[in-house]
Length: 103
Image (cartoon, rainbow, N blue to C red; front, side, top):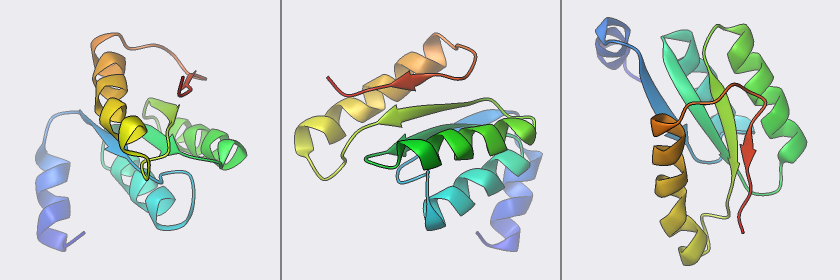
């Protein structure tokens, strides 16, 4: 994220973000940085359930709310429902630990 982008994010009211691949590597780094600047995070993962739990815990330690959502975004049917799961979580916030699994 550019310094200008971070400045805009820091000045915005509390928001939330859906981070695909948010449990590991680059996705995790993005999720943690967004949490640091005031975002609540939905962490999407496919197979990394343990890493997703750890990422959610780290986000919560930063003072943000977090949930994890399992979905394989490489599969069109799962990718299509991921936004609706995320919107549902925004409409009906719950406390962590929370996970929505694909059906």
